[in-house]
Length: 350
Image 1: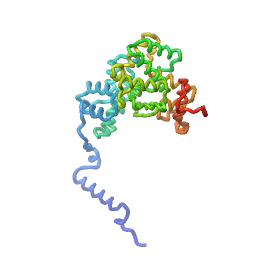
Image 2: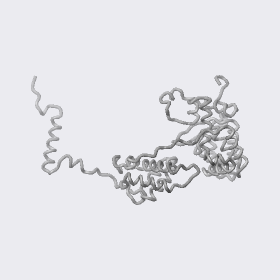
Image 3: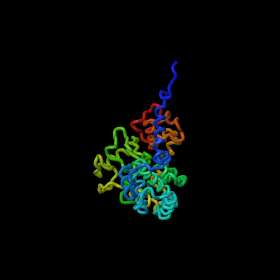
Image 4: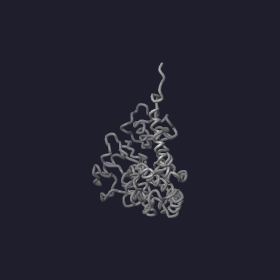
């Protein structure tokens, strides 16, 4: 067998190139470390005032709604500064400033939520800056600031007698009791979030099967069963208040679409009638807790998970993939809740 020459050995030619490059660097008075120290060319880093509108236009409407006010505050404080200028310590100072200047709300918890949201808003902003090649991940100051630990929610299920008091107060007060009682029944039957109700359109109603299409946070979309009584009220509401098929369903008597302010006024008014509502800071999300708690106690976790429109596996892990509840099971839970038969349920098995 003939001997293998060094030039024929695998990688020999590559080694020769490396050695030649090292000789050339030595003649130039440089080392490989000098090359690594040269900063990579990146686009010019914009200011917060320049970059916040770019990010705001690129995110979803839900993200913009959640972080928009905080981006405005960040711009108000750091508008003329470049993204690569603030340090983690300055972010913590900004958190403290926003916490002390938070707008007091009915369910305020000392500005803790505002601190959490400003960190989340900055992380969203800087994550986009990383994707756009404006900063390196190692230079992202928002990564080095921990979010405040979220406190346990004070929301809980409302007893039947208390829920009846809420509905009676809504029906007996205000300038549009028909709208307010419709809102409460919609949330009680579907356990939807406020944004889901506001996003509902007449074309999202399926009267034949008593289903309503809910579009909620995270761009999730699901069909949710409702009772025949609620469906007829929703259809009549759209007809009487001239809601276009592709427009918002819930409207004032004038035909103007309602906003989240209607909910704020509703609970303020109910709180004047029922002091415990004001004291405990009850909101429409308590209705969601009430319905889902009842469903879980009577129909189990899988049905409650589907009823809520949750898409995550949660603590159930991979098992939830195999025990996912069907739409007919959700309809059966609704039928038991309202005492009305639903088109998607059958007498067999229920």
